[in-house]
Amino acid sequence: MKTILFSPVGGTDPISQTNCYDGSMLHICRHRKPDVVYLYLSAEMDKHEDDENDKRYTRAIELLEEKIGHHFEIRLIRRPELNNPHDFNIFFKDFRDVIKNIVAESDQDDRLLVNISSGTPGMKSALNVMAALGEFKCTCIQVTTPEKKLQNHEHTNDFELKTLWDLDPDNDEGAEDRSSDVECPNLLLIKGEQTIKSFLMKYDYHAAYNMALDLSKNYPQSRVSQYIDYLEFAMNRAAFKNVDSYLKKFPELKPLFPIEGADRPVFEYALLCDLKWKRGELSDFIRSLSPLIQELFIRVTNKNIYPVSLEMIAENKGHETWNRKKMQAIAEENITGKKIYDALKNAYDDFESAKNDPYVTSENFCEIINKVSTVSELKDDINILRNQIEKKIRNILAHKIFYVDETWIKKETGNLSPQQIMKLLKKVFRYTSINVRDEYWAVYDEMNKFIMSKIDAR
Image (cartoon, rainbow, N blue to C red; front, side, top):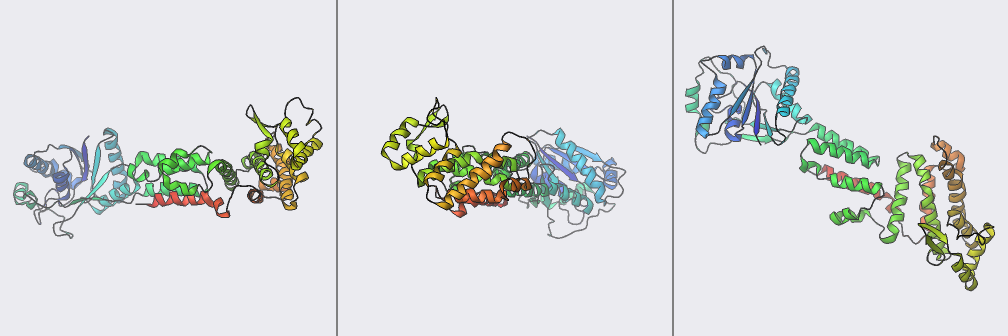
């Protein structure tokens, strides 16, 4: 691994003729000991370096090399035609191209230092803007003057390097290191993190995570690592994947899961349905409703009528089926069980005669609730979900491809908007044994706030 210094050359380089202290370029070389030094020379500085009797910049570094016993490989970037060293536009483009080439020629683990204290205001401004944009991984170095104030930046014609070197107080043992790293606000990183926040507000966790991955390739790992794992967790949660490993690794995430145990997957799936309409994914929203509607109908029946899941339903090759033999036995001994069995027999002519036990469907439970429940409001809600939503529009979308918008949904459902459909589903949860408080439905917003707090942490 090499340390590389890119440095413009200014009026007090290499040694100030005013106070005999190191100029910024030489001082950084002294204390940071770069292996390779790129010196950027405008027309005036190039004349000094081109003069065989002068060569003040390279010779000063050679004197330092001899004193501290560290070898510097010096590479000159000469601009003899550059007579206007104050034009920001010139340097922004030229410095950008030069540093881009330096980075391309360097190894991945090399460290790049940039001197932002030498040169004209145009040079310093260009380097500061480049650092703020964060296009390159670099450390900006500034050097304060010994007097901690502005000083004369001009050399007279009687510049004598050897004399100034001998008088240079920075050569004294224990001399102060006036160089320091500059924490530049990285505008591209800030913009990238603002974009991540925007994705979070839109519940687009895949895009947010991918943006963080891109940032991790170009910016300090210590910064992006503050939040990238949480984004990965959110992306997997929104994809309905098992996130238990994240909960073990990050116990601070547990409050974001208000429903636990066997009920958690049902509530998590309902949250995803809620996200789909919020993201404008209306076709997917409608298609996703059937599993939730059927699960809710089963749980409504279990709690309010009879525990059918435990006593009347069996698993058959991955499908839930009615266990008719057991249903008949229950019907003989239990009046509610008989009402359930009769409701299904009367609704379906082949319920008893079918060769195999019939599959369980949401329509079955709609029949049971209508025939057995005594709660009018519950029956109204169940009928809307089954007949105006699932039967009317979900089943159409399951077999056809066409454009879906809110206007079409309202037209087909009797003026129900996606938000109203979701509101009805939330209401039906109250008839189940899953204790879902109103504030639980905002858990994804709470998750977004949590992740954004990690992005804002410094």
